[in-house]
View (spheres, rainbow, N blue to C red):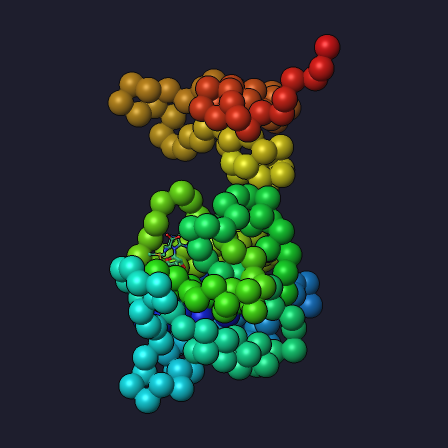
Length: 249
Ligand code: SAM
């Protein structure tokens, strides 16, 4: 997958894209042996990140990308021209059609089904806003999917773009190493939308607290049944809204 990120602050991304799973996903050295089995980007890894500074596309001689809102009021609004031109230029860099996404607190709330859908796309183009957001005409012209990461307001779309990128990239085949990791996680289709079951590791006794006996039994069928039951129980306690509605009588 190619992920283009358009932002006024590309420098915010280096630490996040350069660490842990997001870094591994774009590191060709890790996929030399898997060539042929996985879908790889031209540089040889499952994911390629491309950052674009929207300011580089402004035609304003002072580098301005925002202006005061028509009708008055506080804050500044991102102008149409720089973001439109940036999107046109970046889309031409690869023949694959990009799924355009504008990060916005007014967008569709990001959840695991949407993440799974986006993980199946060959190319995402994420556009991060700042200030009061974009001139509405830019949104109308771009016709993006608007995505929110929650009902709160961030200063800019950069952190939201990183959250979306992280959630999507870990689902791309080859990235986690063991694909089963993502399969049973909370909200995933493999977990039937339930929360994950509790996890334990060595030592078997810590501060007098023991591990559930079933997990030490080696009986895989019992372990599986116990985990399913735990996942259901947790979901009932913590997130009953995730459970399917009861069958009508
Ligand atoms: N005036 C906007 C409103 O009230 O809906 C808020 C603009 S916010 C200060 C600036 C930028 O941060 C937005 O254009 C968007 O890109 C990003 N942003 C803020 N909160 C977000 C959220 N919950 N999810 C995704 N992006 C968000």
